[in-house]
Amino acid sequence: MGKTELCSVYKGFLDCICLCRPRSSSEAAGDDGRDTESGHLIYKSGDVLEDRYEIINTLGEGTFGKVVQCSDLSRGGGRIALKIIRNLEKYRQAAKLEINVLEKIGTSDPDNRHHCVQMLDWFNHCGHMCICFELLSLSTFDFLKANNFLPYSINQIRHMARQICHAVGFLHDNKLTHTDLKPENILFVNSDYSLIYNAEKKCNERRINDTTVRLVDFGSATFDHEHHSTVISTRHYRAPEVVLELGWSHPCDVWSIGCILFEYYQGFTLYQTHDNKEHLAMMERVQGAVPQRMIQRSRKQKYFQRGRLDWNEYSKAGRYVKAKCKPLREYLLSRGTEHQQLFHLLERMLEYEPSARISLSSTLGHPFVLPPHPPGRSHAWRHSCDMNR
Image (tube, rainbow, N blue to C red; front, top):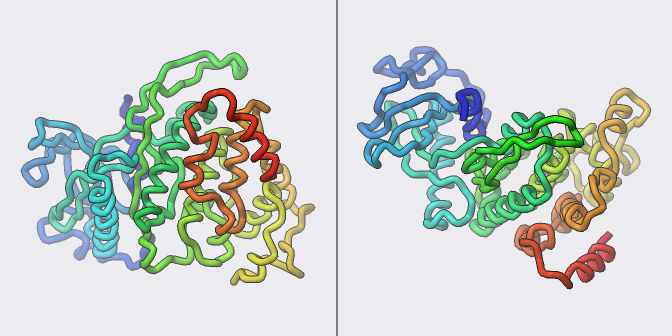
C-alpha cells in the first residue's frame, strides 16, 4: 500500500466530539514542552512511548488527535495503530468514554468474532490518552474514492452487509448505539485488490480481494442509560427521528446502515445535503411523505405547514432535490433476484417510523444478508416481498 493510501486509513478513528472552549498555549504546551499550541504531541519516527511502542509514521490526523503506526517492541515488533489524543481536558474525558466502550466490547467479545476493532492497550503519556488498536487498512469510503467511485459488486455488498449488521447488532445487544455509522468508519482488514477491465465503463477498476471489515470509531457510542444528545450522526446518514428531534435509539443505526449499503451499490450518497428541510424533502422524494404522527410529535414545526413539509419543488432548492433524488426502486441497476432482495432490505431499513424499521436481528435472517441459499426458497421470498410492498 502506498504512503498516500496509508495516510487516509485511520481518519475514521478521528471524528471528534465537538466541544468549544479553546486552551491557552501555555495550558496546551504541558510542562515538558512536548506539545504544540493546539495540544498535539510532538514526535518523530523512531520515538518510543512507554518503552514499548516505536513510532513508524503518521496514518491520519483529526480534531481529536493523531493516529500513528507503531512497532510493538514487546510483541516481536508487530505493527499496531496508536491513537494519540490531544493534551486537552475535554478530549481526555471523551477518550475515557471511548475506552469504556472499547473495554465493554473487549469483555463481551474476547475472541474478536463480532467485527468490531479491538483495543489492545491504553495508557496516559504526558497528558495524552493513547489507545492501541489492531492495524487495519483502507476504509470502505477511501477504497471507493480510490476506485473513482465505481460501486462494489452485489456479492461484495452482501458480505459487508452481513458483517456490519452483525457488528452493530452486537452493540445493540450490549445496550449501545454507535450513532456515527458511515463508510469512513468501516475499515477493510486488508485492502489489496486486483485490477480488472470494466467493459461497460471502458476503464480498469480495482476489485478488492477480501471484503472482511471491522467497525471502528466508538467515540460517540452511547449506552442506553446515558444522556442522548439531540444531534448525532454525520448528516448524510442521519435518521429522520434525529432530524425531527423525536428522540432516538438503536433504530437510528439501522437507518445509517441502509444509507451505507445504498452508497456501496451506487457509488454515491443517497442524501447529499447540508440542510434539515432539504434533507426531509429528499427523504420524501425517495420514500414518500413523512408520516403525520411523526410531524405532529416533532419539535421542528417550522419545517411544516398544515401537516405537510413546507417545500416549494419549483424553487432552486426544489429543482436540486428533484434532480438529485428519485423513488428508491428507480435506483435498481438490475431486475435480478439479489438486487430485488437488497432493495427490499433497504425499504425496511429506511422506514420512517423507528418502531417499524427492521431490527438487526431480523436483518441477519433477511434473504439478502443470508449466504446464498439452496434452490426452492426463492418463491417464498418473492411472495413475502410482494406482501410487504
